[in-house]
Length: 419
Ligand SMILES: Cc1cc2nc3c(=O)[nH]c(=O)nc-3n(C[C@H](O)[C@H](O)[C@H](O)COP(=O)(O)OP(=O)(O)OC[C@H]3O[C@@H](n4cnc5c(N)ncnc54)[C@H](O)[C@@H]3O)c2cc1C
Figure 1: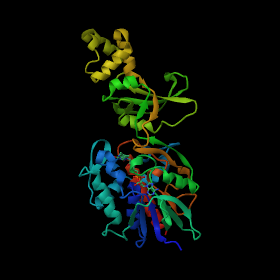
Figure 2: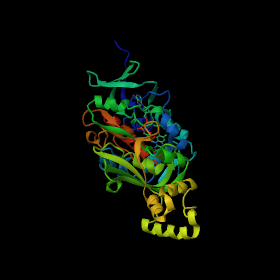
Figure 3: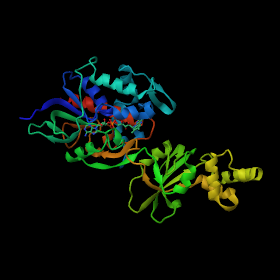
Figure 4: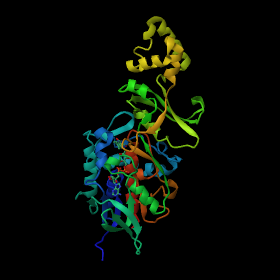
């Protein structure tokens, strides 16, 4: 006879979505539920401590269904119900209830008043495991790395850990995240478990990350430079011209040059579109003067050249970048060549910066196989998904956590009310 413990709901992964799912489940009308949060790390919320550079941009006040996409395209149809019922305002109120006030910075980004990510983790832990609050506290089981989930003969789920411990549950909510931030515990195991249960997984790729680029000599000169501009990720037919490329995504903001890579928030925001396409290569095209048309810029540079001579890019760009552009413009440093380069400086991505650097995952459990209202599997009754494990991703700015918390609450309530 195995030494098995049984729960009504087992939540696999004690991150943003899992902790919020536990808070929702214990507060549901069904107050006497036995809920477990099973976490492979030694503590819950390890990734959350690192979010927003340690300050945690926990929500975006303006997050809307259309801000979300999937590895297959648009995700607005899928995310609409979660955002409508458990959107940023509802989540802000839940955090306020847990004693966490949020303050707004630019563009709707909300942070804890303390500006410490730890406050967010502590509030979630209070809500999920604390003695106060409605319903029985959930139980946190750390150091339990779920390796496998199967159905027991009586219909319950059997969760097996890497060290062979087992537990049983009537309902399972998978909140293991994707593969981003592998150092915080996300190694894609949850996606493998979803596949073993019959789900399709859209190939995960690192998103919200920078690009390693082929132009290492140029990058060595630019290392440390930050500039404002528009970034376009183009898919160009192999052997074709950049001019014939298709723009997959573009964004404007700060661009950061490093010794072998290009990064910065606007680069991160296009990185989720770097998905293999047969017969296509990728180009990262930078417009370092987005406020000017090329022709107007050329005239402006000609005027500046007449008065400033070789210093005609001085103060328009960081010095190292101006120097590099002039060098690329070549002999005579013609304003025309410089204007063209400033509008179309191209880099060739050879790879994204990978899972350790990525803030999120593009791809995941295919949305067509999950009910968007309850987040229950269409294939395995009693199995729910929330957070980054689903094929939903978004730009920087608190959108990922808005999704993780909103979907966590949705799945937690639905699972609890189904019992
Ligand atoms: C450095 C960094 C900064 C970020 N900053 C922000 C930000 O400021 N704002 C924002 O909106 N988003 C940010 N993000 C993204 C955001 O943190 C994630 O999208 C979000 O945490 C996803 O929530 P989740 O609950 O789905 O997964 P996670 O928070 O990743 O939680 C998953 C949990 O599951 C556990 N787990 C995994 N596999 C198993 C297993 N087999 N058994 C048991 N447990 C398992 C993991 O250890 C982990 O604790 C950032 C990400 C990173 C890496």
